Each structure stands twice: as C-alpha cells, then as structure tokens.
Length: 232
Ligand code: SF4
Image (tube, rainbow, N blue to C red; front, top):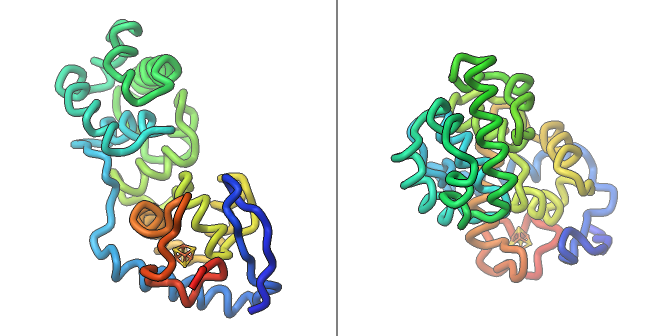
C-alpha cells in the first residue's frame, strides 16, 4: 500500500490507502470484522437497561459521557422514574440534578422530558421500532436510534457512529469522511447489512480497549496487519 497522510479527527494522524481496489478494500473490511468478532465474541452495549425506553434514556445521557458514569446515574434514575410517564412528569430542575454527573444536564433533561412526553402523546408511551419514528423524538439522532433499534429490538437500520467508530473508521481507511452521517453511509456500503449492528459494537469496544484516541496500542492490535494507520 502506498499510504497518504493527513490529520484526522482530534488531530490524529491518519494514513489512507492510496486508491485501494474496492474488492480488496471489502475483503480487508470483512477480515477486520472477523478478527474483531473473535476479540469480542459477545459484543453488546455496556449501557445497563431493562427495556427499550431505558436504553433510549441511557443513550441520550451517554452523549459526551462515559458508559460507566451513565450506568451509575441511571441505577438511581430508573429506580425513581422507570417509565416514560414517570420521566414526563418529573420537574425539570429535579431531573437536571439527578443526571448532572453526565454533563450537558440542562439540555439532556429538557430533551428527556420532551422525548417522554412525545412518546406518550404519539406512541402510547412505547418506544417505536422504526428509524423514522425514533428520529422524530426530541434529542434522538441516527446514532441513538441505531443503538435502540439494534440493541433493544435487534432491528438493523444502520451503523452506530459514535466518537470511537468515527475515529476507527478513518484510521482503518474505511472512510475519508468527517461527519457521522457520511461515515455511516460509507460503512453501510462497505459492509453487508447483516453485520451493521455488530460492526458498531465491536468498533466501539476496540476503540476503548486498544485503538484509543490519544495512544493506540498498535503492537497489541489484532488487525494491525490490516490497518493503514498501524504504527507497527
Ligand atoms: S493498528 Fe489497530 S490500534 Fe493501531 S491505528 Fe490501526 S486499528 Fe488502531
């Protein structure tokens, strides 16, 4: 490969394969997923939840926050407000304080209450099972909708693109795009639909464990011979 260099997200150096043959790129992508599947055989979201509504709430809270911190907050939150009806009626100031450790708590509280109210008014308090309906809810974008559809319902609708998937998709040369929507579109073209749910999950786990933002551990990476950004 004849790598090109550029600065990626957060200034991360990204080396991209020069005009990689589409067939070879697809085979490389499949091989990367196969190895990551072995590394994380039972991959699933780390956000604790007992139903689709709780996963929706946890995913909204996870923006700019670690899953560990969200799980600490939702333990008490779901005990006090387990359903959409409960969250819809909680005073906003009270909810703000309960979710404060997750950051951006004012906006998140506003969205959670508005989202819960719309769930009750339009969907009978039940989380809907389509992308179109989910993204119509306040505070819900494609990433959150993909998490809920994939992890709570097992419905394939796209690829979850969070900060880890964003970074890894670029380092691995699966995309040159820089917006979640365009990165997701590239991943959906590159990988078969049956793999979309798993792909997002294993990339997130790999990003946390090995290919982290500041110091990727390329020598220990199971796909370092398939990665154009490998330092090995
Ligand atoms: S070799 Fe692995 S750890 Fe290194 S940049 Fe590529 S995917 Fe990340």
